[in-house]
Image 1 (cartoon, rainbow, N blue to C red):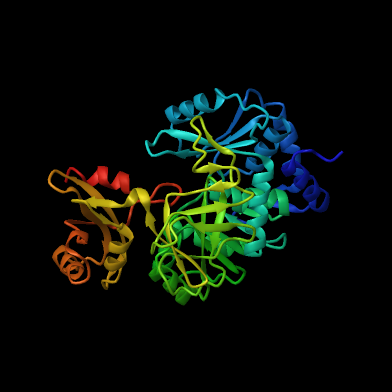
Image 2: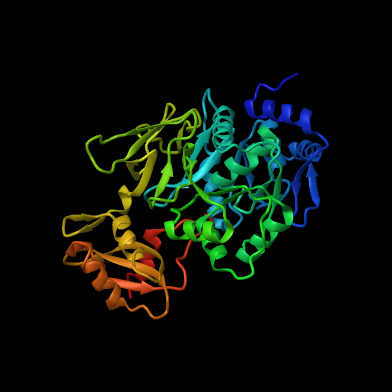
Length: 438
């Protein structure tokens, strides 16, 4: 009898089609799991699902999809957790998520995210929403069962879950699974496995561009970048070196995929393309050059827990904190509401300052953030990865010629590379804390 759970029903159809076909490979091309073996492991794990929440914190292991299937069949709520999570963070997450009374519409999966206070909170999802996200992504990006996904991004992260786990279960898209995040190893494994689709992050593409003796990638047909803005310079260098374009993908934990740059013309910084098939994007301030948006999608979660925020998420809608600007054939991300720096009452958008810094010859990457100031509330500062011969006073003078006085950084900190977390994201708040005392 067909399951009444949308994800399980889709999996049963996939299993009937591809039972003995390879589902998960290692980076040497050896088969780790067939689709039948994914199912067998799920049946074994089902007896181990107990309690209201089933944490999945095993990292990029071949049993990850089986853990999810076991949770679905056991009617317990799956809670993906990153492999790097500390014991204290894990305990706090379980404590929050186990103390729940879900009422008539219980979730099947919770995604953890941080609120404005950095305290963990969960986003509630039903199978229908997770299925909708998978279909929207696969249909828009043209990903099908004949492809081979390369899985190095964390399966526990929303990006990895939507682009790797659910396409395997719903569409029968196999994946080559990697746990080595060193860029050289990733590039070599991409070539060795013959992967056709690479869901990556800007940090990987930048490293690939700087490598010597890069292997050929004859099977790779689709390069996707998400998790952080893709610098235009990196995208152009990659295309020149590998003869392949990188397609920017904009999504959120709360609603899955939002926009996708189908054409990858690489003409505008921050361009993320039009909405995915089945997704609608509305500008909340129609007369502003840049505005917050409201997303309507069947993939949007039911809401936050434990503190709901119905004005931001619920009823098939989500309003992120990102600032977007309508552009030719789509949208550009130009910053976040929370990132705006208040310099003596004047608002500075970090993305505008970053764009100017990146125009300076020899600057590879830049991130701008605010530092506390007794007299001015905040001051503009920047972390810059650049050639060794570039000096702070040269960059500051360059900015003075192109920006208003209050937009010019007061300090520039030179780094080998911009620090990112496991998701490939840059935290301006963490940079402000790190450099605030220097």
